[in-house]
Amino acid sequence: MSLILKAVENIPLIKKGDDIAEMIYQNTPEIADKDIIVIASTVVSKSLGLTFREEEIVPSAEAERIAALNGKNPRFVQAVLDESLEVFTETPFMLVRNKNGHVCINAGIDASNVGNGLLLKLPEMPDKHAAAIGKSIERKTGKKISVIITDTNGRAFKDGQTNVAVGLYNIKAIRPWIGEKDLYGKILEISEEAVADEIAGAANLIMGEGGGGVPAVIVRGLDLYTDETVSIADMYRNEEKDVIVRSLLKLKNEK
Amino acid sequence: MSLILKAVENIPLIKKGDDIAEMIYQNTPEIADKDIIVIASTVVSKSLGLTFREEEIVPSAEAERIAALNGKNPRFVQAVLDESLEVFTETPFMLVRNKNGHVCINAGIDASNVGNGLLLKLPEMPDKHAAAIGKSIERKTGKKISVIITDTNGRAFKDGQTNVAVGLYNIKAIRPWIGEKDLYGKILEISEEAVADEIAGAANLIMGEGGGGVPAVIVRGLDLYTDETVSIADMYRNEEKDVIVRSLLKLKNEK
Image (tube, rainbow over all chains, first blue to last red):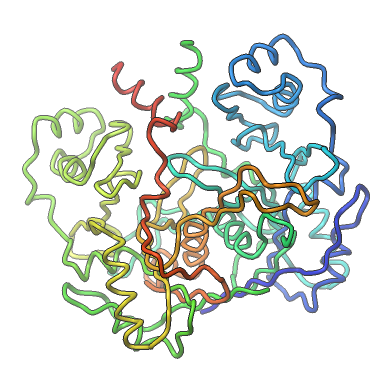
């Protein structure tokens, strides 16, 4: 069994209104059934015009309070609050649950690869955007494909960031192994493979973060296509079950 | 740019004393310079004979105390304690830093794909074992290769597990992008790509968790070979900088 990942080269810098599906289609020699197209959220956000300037943001008293703790610009803190459902840590960095349920630093607001001193937000309703791009590519090619929109994220306990899935089309976040037999015939009790995140990370290996980076990667060789409606939020752990969330909130509320 | 992952098929069930390097060599049609060989820690542990029976373990008073909290067998709890430097949560599950510095549930002790009612420990000094296997394959092939030993891990905030790196040879855990320019010529300020974990996760997509699983995958197309001495521990976050560790320990110590 083998797996092939191919960078979609020659995609120009994305501007508001650009048709990402058409750009991927034009720059991919061949798209096959069950291909998974991994797309960096930065280009989705740019095509949606989700850039803004810090100066446009008016900070609330809450943003001023948090900015005094973590040393950030209160306008930036307000932008993070505007994109967040819940704040888990205020300092030394803001770890939040963003509007889509995704837990990340600064609600995913970033200045890298944006240009002109602008900041960029993550798209709202990322599954909807993944589906729009995926359906457009399916119409152009006549093939049944999946789409994963990704973002770069830090993680607990370890330095470094990995690419993770933040929006899905025609692929589930999790591949369950529960109930299947292991090598010795024993039933596997707890095993849910976070395939969408593993694919996102794999694609990042050839996407790169710098100026030579490519915003889309074709992944071929997996059998993970589904025509069911999928939701990235299915992967987000129920807060009551999350001992890390509980301990972070307890620490925050004691201060 | 493209990346290819190939499963190493036909490796038999591993027993104590088996030569994993030879088995990978025998079952891989071609190994090239800069190939990265990803190996599941389960087979490394089995070749080292790191299986044991719960009944062999004598629980301490501390193990009895924790078992009363989390409902596990005190002997199993003792086995976890024996493999741990530090315990972050005692219930509903034991999240620990294992002897190698790796943060994981139950110190990585697992019964899946082991057989005979046995439990399996993670190898100690995993970089040393990665190097031994890597050097052996290099001698057999005359090629310069890297090795990543992996384990399946849960993660914060999200359901599901991914494969992660727990031991390295001739590849660094992190690829730094700091100081490089982005698409618009802006210097990237914080970006350290956790490539070893991304590669581990990618390999898991074709390794599988069940009876059809393969224990080794060849990854070709990346330029991450180094002949420097590497350490998986370089990736483990300094505890003083880790807000999640601090909050978990605070919650635990208040109980």
